[in-house]
Image 1 (cartoon, each protein chain N blue to C red):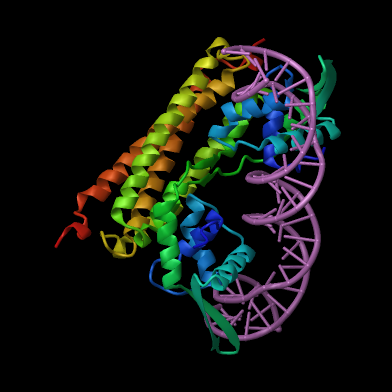
Image 2: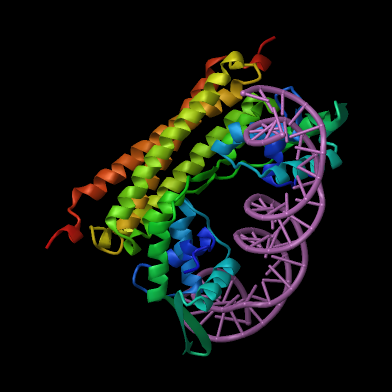
Length: 191
Length: 191
DNA sequence: GCCTGCATGTAAGAAGTTACATGATTGC
DNA sequence: GCAATCATGTAACTTCTTACATGCAGGC
């Protein structure tokens, strides 16, 4: 069983584990609602490419039918797909998460910048965290219908709550850094 | 001023903002010690490729000299490089961090797995977080020599402390998820 | 004498992005 | 009638990784 697929391929396969069948367009929407927060938001073109590959491998089943004047294809997880997913999760280690933290990257080299720019960046990050928190709260609410153990959205709800905690923690770390940067007076203000 | 370079290129340029000049090999070591935790650990081959590009653009200055029987090239930030870095940080937004969270990705689709595998994954993550915390603590200690405001390692120390807080928070979120998964009995244990 | 670390790359390929292209449906 | 959304891709390109290749220096 070839399990040397990229993680994003498994991610897309995983979006089909909730018992419904989706169009490529809907897969993209679901990715934007969930995967975006702790994986990536794949481009439309990549979604279709991955679905084509998964279909070739027999891991999803594609069903095309006429919807009025156009052809619409929906995709569903196949038994082989479910088995491949299970094998991947039980037999390969998850590995350590990779953070591509644009804010920390810039903070690291802020010696090449100036204190006011740094503070502005951190305040902007706080605003964006607020917005992300709002978005994810909305997603979390939409899972309430089936978030009990054994139901379809149980694990997604655990993940969403983790994500909410993560954003709250990030905001705390950002404020802490801002306070630390404010502690000592800005040299450029002095005569 | 062409500032449409990939972020990783700026990241490598940023490693040269600490006043010293490094070989490609040393740049890679510094990346592994710092960037690894909140950006990426670029491959050796990419480090050399980026340094060549930065040299072509005049953003770093390469100096080759004979060290015994072999030629060794060291790289230092040029004035143009410093200006480009500053322009990048003041004129372009940082954007939102991207988390490639292998553990949350798998947790999302754990309905296709089984409870024991999920718990094993989370416990393994806790162990890896411990190891990462140790590593980063070592890095943080090595910055003590110059971590006061205005000194070379001031911003790196702010970043390292943020990173330590982040790992501690991750461990907390992981334990919380583990407890939540333990709350309800494993159906497969029942008769 | 051998192994580890230092030092420097090339080449091939996969993964993923942006830009381009097309057309139907639905709500206003 | 027009705009936004639904729906599906192709093509070109960049980034980044893995595998390969080479050789010196220093410690045991």
